[in-house]
Amino acid sequence: MKKILVCLFTVVLLMSLLGGCSKETKTSDTKVTPDKKYEDNNEKKAKEEKVTIKWLHHWGEEGVRQWLEELEKTYEEAHPNVDIEITAAGGDNYYTLLKTKIASDDAPDIYDVDLIADQEFIDNNYLTDLTDAPFIPNIQPSVIDSVKKLGNGKVLAIPLDVWGAVVTYNKDVFEEAGISKAPATKKEFEEALKKLKDIGVDPIGASYQDRWTLDWELQNDYVVSILGNYDEEWIKKVQSRELKFQDDKNGFKEVLERLKERYQYVNRDPFGTDWNTVQDKLATGKIGMLINGTWTVGGVQAKNPDVNLGVMALPVFDEPAENKVVLGVKGGLAVHNGAKNKEVVYDFFNHIFSKSMAKIYQEKKVALSTVEGVELDPDSCFNTLVEYQNNGQVVDMSYLLSSFQDEFGNAFIDQISLYLLEDMTEDACIEALDKEFDKIAKRQ
Image (cartoon, rainbow, N blue to C red):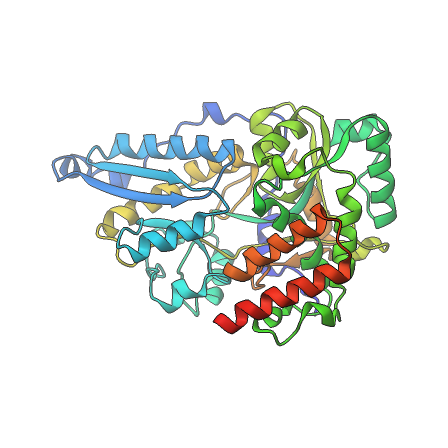
């Protein structure tokens, strides 16, 4: 089944909420002013007992780190009795750590969840219903409508931005290699890889030491080629064993073939290279592109503000119209249902989702904000996303289970890694995947 991003993306992208990829920003000149209605209570709150709010996240981008520092600093200055304790976890172990903390009665007050993938958080009533929270009017109505659908009619998490799977490339490196425009077909993409290699640049940055990056490279392909074209519940069916990889009705074998074709164009020692390193390489023109997510732009620009970046869909088909970017909202920041100081958390959320902080977030991370009325610089590589939208080349990931979960997810990446490292055949990889998935399914 084909799904094109509906009202959320149309509103976010087509109502002038564009930008974030321009070379220059004026974030340093932005002064954050806490909302007046909360300032009035500061004197009273200052006399109250010290309150600690714990926040666990897994964002590694430098721009987001800078935003978090500004967010924490400005809120604590306005609320002397509140200590915001922000902890970062690695992308590969975030959910394991979060679930361990919840199980040991040490849950953070704030964390982010994927409302599609993390159904157990809903089933176990871990998430506070934010539907009537005072900061909800700050968020675009279309975003609220989307998360309500994900939360069975309740607002259980609030996304900071619209995000998804795209290819980020260095325009100057492409130009040096004689690539005048972003490849729109598989053939053009293959030609671009050869041209980049010919000038001594690694065409693709691979950082499989951080396992999640291999997962997102694959999502750039199969979310479009399988979930977007054939069966949006393919992952659910494979995990339930209703379908097996060897059934291959939707072209998973071709996904593997394309991955191995790209593998010959990645940097040396991809399984010993981390995400931070390949961002540095893209920022300095040592690689041509990263096949990952929308957050890549901000992470790379934080390392080199003058880098000239573009975004595009990963071309997996020979017909240009079939190649699509993957975008949407699937969850966001949530408040743990057992949080002891929800009134303070709500006050902090009002600050997080204020226009001033949303503006800084958008500029620092380079993103598409979900906050109402936040305008972005129109000189942006994200303008390309509007072109994809206008051409019907977007797969809405908002309601899709787009990655394998828990034990299945670990087994999937383990086997895909072996497929590349040991140069296995596609058939051997598929057979091994089915054996591992059968074992996991029997244990559940």
